[in-house]
Image (cartoon, rainbow, N blue to C red; front, side):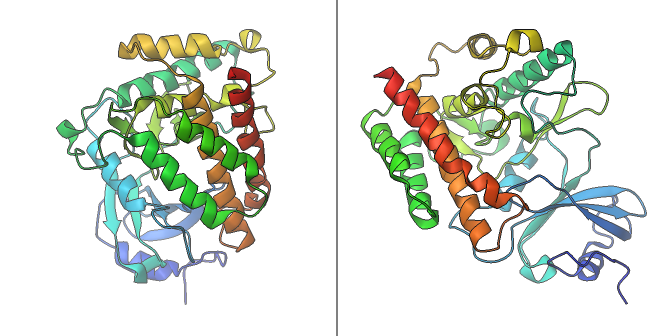
Length: 343
């Protein structure tokens, strides 16, 4: 008889417990399992054992889009960054055997902390909000100053031509996952293709670097881990920076954005000051332009379209995936508005 009473799992926890027994010291004998809520991509679980707790992250069950949900890449990049200034959890084990939990998965160390999904940080004081945003800025700058070759990631992606490849990739994803009228998405895609910015610079890019993917210390507004690396690759750092600034171009009901809020009173830096701090930390002269912001908003729109497609097929990682998927049109329109405003 099973020792686990969670009937909502899509895999056999006893088989997992048998597989993990004795593989590393952090867990001991597995005695419990809890699913983390809030994620839209790879299902993530806290495994509780006689010696402590660890975290398991796997692909979602069922059919998935090509190159999506790359847990192997997540494991590799976080392993490579372990000795850098970029805070990441400790990687413990990777498993390709689909017989254990139905998909490939990896196990990492458990860190006690807080995740803030609302960019307004309503539970923090103005001073703490300022510290949290500066911490996020610091982590982003640290990542973009890591030499890919020095940490064994010289082959983690192609060099140069990042935006062209990304537009081609996400155009294919849009075609495979569209569930509604995507004419605005297509108009933005065509503008991006015709107005490509130079993109020969190559660094490690997270691909989804936002407040909701940072784990903060339990007792202070300091980031202790950057999570959710499935979109990471070698690419242009301004793609990461522009994506990180999406909150400034979306409203609170659009995935926790900041547009329309009194940022000065709240203690949150405005976009200009936030970017200036990043440029100062990295010594960068090339700056974020309309192209970078429109690209990031459009790519986010395509990601939301994929979430909507998974919800329609019953293969989504979060219960609110259908609602979140509706944001696809909102972010595509935000990108189109930026382009129109820029003339």
